[in-house]
Image (cartoon, rainbow, N blue to C red; front, side, top):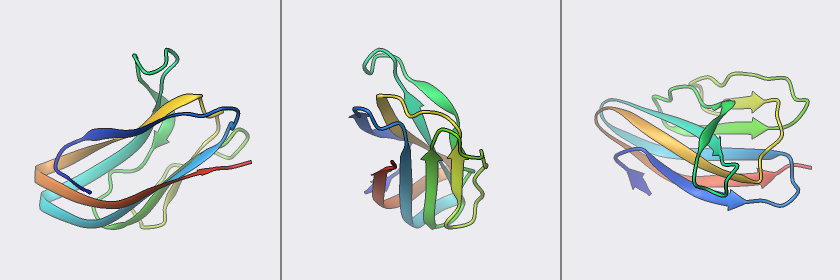
Length: 122
């Protein structure tokens, strides 16, 4: 999936799992100084209003690779970096209704997302 602007995707109503790991796979960047930021948002009203989960945001990515966000109660919070394989860790409980959003920056940016993988952690 090639994206040329920010978008939200993968709204989910989970039942009972308090933890989540999301992986974002990026294969190609194009444009002048392109960047991408992925984050997780939560909704307490079944998808009408969305708020960022504090800390559940990647660094401003400037290259291809694999980037992750882990939401897990009790985990040590760690900010992600721009290095491929970097994982942002957030110490909180995953809400029942959430979605993944991303924002592209730069001049005429394009980012090829090859896969978004979601793992429930027990």
